[in-house]
Image 1 (cartoon, one colour):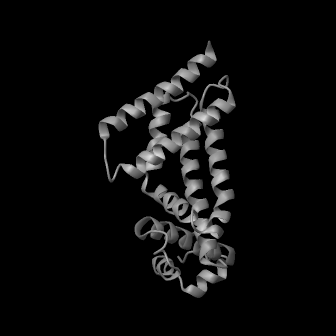
Image 2 (image 1 turned 90 degrees about the vertical axis):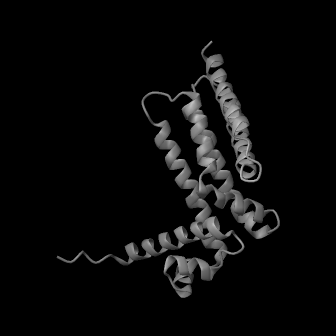
Image 3 (image 1 turned 120 degrees about the vertical axis):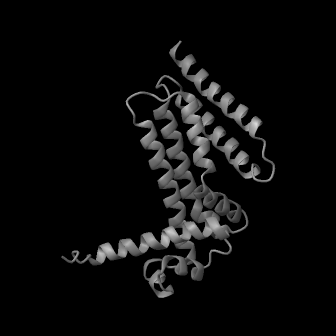
Amino acid sequence: MTAPRRTQAERKGATIAKLVDATIEAIEEVGYHRASIGEICTRAGVSKGGLFRHFDSRLDVVVAAAQEVGRRHMANFRDLTTTEDRLPPIDLVRYARAAIRHETNVVWFELLVAARTEPELRERLHPVARALIDDVEQAAIDALDPDVPPDLTRLVATSLIHMFDGESIFRNTYPRPDLEEERLENAARLVEMLSRQAVT
């Protein structure tokens, strides 16, 4: 029995997904500047004409890749925090660090560094980065005790992200596993302390 023929919309969606996945993979493996249209198309098995039927430029597919990386991270975090019981702070903090260290997150690091000197990329990434940080902050508010002031939760969440970002970048060049574990435990204590203060 033959499989039902896919609709045009389904074929379009599948091609776009292949191109976005290939862009993520290319940036992750060879870096932003070497993730050319040719590199992306080869990895996706799609012609350059096929790419330009769905995206106006390389920048458009790169921004779509950035959005997809953020979507994947937030979907995983939402799955983690939608359990009936609140997770212990150490589990939340450990997950946040693991997500930041995940190889897919390298895409964000590559793009953020490139955006420093490329105004158009910076302008296009601004709303994507803002939406991701807003989602992270809201997820932290949802995960912690509701009595913790939201502004304080936002401050702690973004501070932890920036700390783990820096740790993730440095750990390949100057690994300090003992200090990293101590940092993780103290970050969890901070989150736990916030929750305890909210209850008292």
